[in-house]
Image (tube, rainbow, N blue to C red; front, top):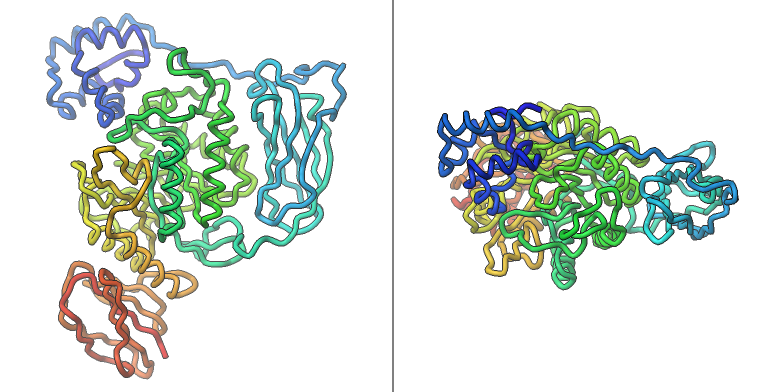
Length: 583
């Protein structure tokens, strides 16, 4: 690779010799990288862009020439790794086919996790050298799942049965002892609280697989599983009392402002001192992750699991293609049987300097091909929207691209992409110095309502400054803001609305509305404060009318009935809504 003024500094920094040259000429860059809020952006920036993005760094034309001259003689590292192809000779002929000890339950409930556990071989590197697949069959229908190595000679294969009846299974493996093992189990009716995985319904909305509507009311808590157990348990207790039924969270730990602590577990074996081995997964890390996913499931919370993100100091964001694909195969094998998992390929994909569009498309293919249950899948932007028209994307996971306006664009995005719009990041309620983290509770609530009446779903986050740096948006703990109880109120309004979801109605230029013509209307006035409003409805249809104070969380039903053209008196306050239901 040729190093030029346009080369991303991440490529320069990943080469030791080039890194030393850069450090000699531009030590200020390395000072910037000590600030976790800037490290990611430095790698994404070129020398050319550095002049405007980081004005405190002095870059003269002579300096650029000197750098280019020295860097021109550097051969770029080939950050590759030969893929290990599993061999059928992993176990020799002295090992009997299908001789591994296996344990499994006799029954499993519909949409629960049925797990096979095998006591198998552990020599060499089983993560790379052993393949394990299991075919599950019922009434002529067959689903294949991928097994995985869980350390200490233990292999597992997980299956989420979606149909009651007598399922049979047979293993296929490159290890003789794990090959050709057969058995059966009975799938029984699900618990009343288990409605299956979430699916897209009616183009722009969601339901559980049993048909029950699902209204995503999400929050973001990126690195909560990477904290100490006391804080993790406090987060779960907070969620139990919250309105949230969806959680955005990262697999990998996070290195960013207010995120400087080391995690309790690393996803790969090894240590920081001696280096992490990207060819060996750390089972304890993934066992901890799946335990928390299971606990969220018991609370009725869907896990929007972020597979990659750019805020990293350990090397997870910069893994090569072989390492990336191996990680994806492994995590999908471990987690796809959990009904409450959604796949988010990345948080802010466009800030990951080491990945390009072909990588993201390949990642989507790996996940889709190895997930037999077709969980929801999307990808999240920072500055540049992904092409949400891509057929593998089930819903649009959107971050705002305007400092002030986001939810107001919901109906336009519906028309553009013809998929559910989930604004996972509309900014956060809080008071930190960053513009994305200091909106008021009133504004957070307003954005939720704007998104809802425009036919979408808005997500919450909270970033109130604390001296111990425990901010909900990343570490969890307790909620301190004023918006969650108002969001709970909105959730109730939405659940009482049309069973097929709120869809926008274009009745006036100045007030967004949603509902079903002649049956149900929900108007939202936002930060406007009218004293009255005239409505023009179809003659002959009578309505009951309610005035909703979305901030004070009150509903006032007006006396009498209304039809045709009529006037409604309003209190002249912000954040009011009007609901009309046909009698």
